Image (cartoon, rainbow, N blue to C red; front, side):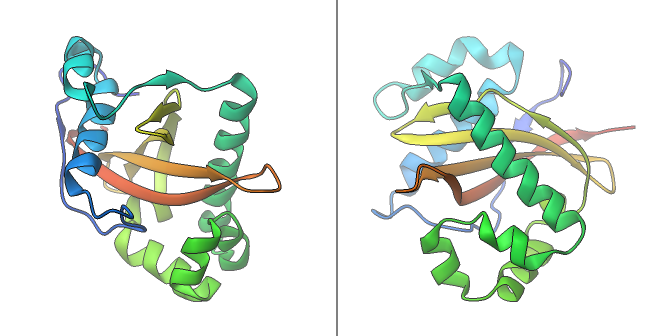
Length: 176
């Protein structure tokens, strides 16, 4: 977890998926809301930021556990370069977008190095924001740079959760 005094900064990163309606404003608000939620000193600003577009709501414990398990399993698969298994945790639209497990893992390797090869992981409390289940995960990369991965997840017809997108927010500061 990040300590006091760590300021979050939203940076443009490659995206796994885009909003269907093209709403970059909605996505930016979601990213800022989660970045603020990860910094205890910024929590008083969260309701004002989220007003009108992002409404945090509690996720049932069983769903929170299942979502965390999906992300942990995908991170474990990525750590051993198991492209097939990592790809299996992606939502159908994401699998169609990348076509093959090799295309998917190559995108993660080149576009999301902090997800592909992290040195620490800490899960935040998942929330429903703007009608989406979002799970924030603090990561540090091999250089000690701090990141917040914002996973969007969808429940499938078979009731399993699958990852439908991920954004990275880089924090100022390093793990030493």
